[in-house]
Image 1: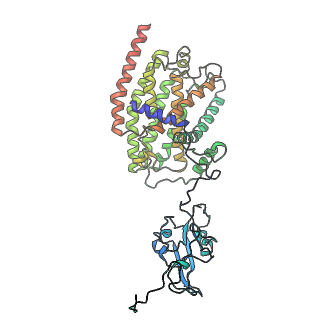
Image 2 (image 1 turned 120 degrees about the horizontal axis):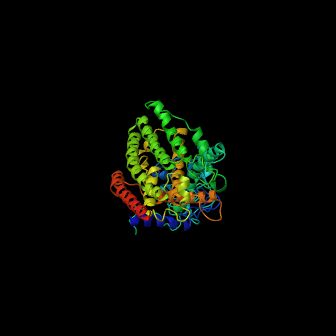
Image 3 (image 1 turned 60 degrees about the horizontal axis):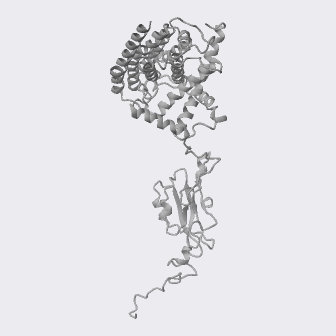
Length: 171
Length: 316
C-alpha cells in the first residue's frame, strides 16, 4: 500500500522533469559522425572511383539490397558497370562498409531520405557517388595495392617490394 | 433548485459533457506524456488541441464492421446503453445552483442505479461479440462491477447519514461548514477506489486488459460503436470525478470565484488524478481484485457506516 502511494508521488514528480523528446523538424538531433544512415560511394583523392566491384558488400548484405555488375575500364581497373542500392530494403547495418576492402562504400549520418514513391528509394550509381573521399581522405586503393593495372606493374605500388623471382636460386 | 430553463440546461450539459469527454482524450495523452517525460500530441493546432478533431474525423470514417458471427441486435444496442446510462446520470449532478437538469430527492440512488445499469452495456457487448476474448472481458466486468458496486454504495451511506438527504444539492449545502472529505475520509478513499473500478480505469481495467484480452469486451467493435465505448469511458471518468466533488469536496462551494468555476476546478483535479493513477499503477491480477474488494473494502465500508451511524446517533 505504501509503495503504491510512493509510486504515484514519484510519477507526479515527473511533471517537473525536463522532457527527453527532441522536437525534430525544428530542432535537429545530434548525430554521431559514425552513426549509420544513407549509404554513399566515395572517390579516391585523384577523383577516380574507389569501388572495384568485388561484390563483397553484396554478399555481406543480410537483406540483399545491393546489386552491381563488375566491368573493366581501358586502364584495366575494375569498376561497377551499375551499382544499385534498394533503400526500401536496407536496414543500415553497416556490414557493407565493414566488408569493403577499398573504403569505397560508406555510411553517412544523413537519415532524411523519406519518399512518397517507393521506386524513388532505389538509388543508382550516380545517386550514390560523391565527389570526395568520405571518411578516409588520403587513401587511394590503386596506388597502394599490389594489383596490376595499366601504368603500374607488380611491385610498383607504394611501400611494395619488387616481386621475388621464385625460380632464381640467388639470394 | 431545478433550473428555470430545463431544455437549455439539458442541451448545455449534454454539449459540455460530450465535448469535455472528447477533449479528455487529448488531456489524457498530454498528461500521460508529461509524466513519461514526453510531449504527446502537440502538432495539430495550438498545443495539439485539434488532435480531438482529427481523432473524431478518423473514428467517423472508419469502417463500421459488424461481425457475421455476432448477435446483431444486441451488438448494436450495447454501446448505446453505456452512453445512455452515463448521460442520464449527469441529469442529477448539481454543477452549480441553477445548473442542474432535475433535482431528484433520490438523486444518489438514481446515480447508483444508473451506474449499475451501465454494466449491462459491457456484459452484453462481450456476450454479443461471440469471441472468447470479448466474453472473458464481459464476464470480468460483470464480476468486478458486482463486487465494487456493493461497497461503492455502502461507502456513500456515511455521507447520506451526515447530510440527512439523498438529494445531491442538499448534500452540497450540508458541506457549507466542513467538506465531507474530513469526517468521511475513509468513505472518500473507498468511493475513490470503487469509482476507478466503476469507470474501468487502470489499475482496474481488467475488462479490457489489452495485455491479455486484445481489447476485452470491445475487441470486435470498430468505427462509431467503438467510439461510443471510448467516449462512454471518458464520460464515466467525468461523472465519477463530479460525484467525488459533489459528495466529498463541497461541490460548487468556494470563495471569490463563481460556483461553476469551483466545480469545474475540483472536477478537473480529480480527472487529472485518475490519469495520474493510470500513469503510475500496474494492472491488478483478477483474483487480487476480487479478494481486495470482498475481504478489505467491503468490511471497511461496513465499519465506516457503523462508526458514522454511531457518531451521528450520539450527536443528536
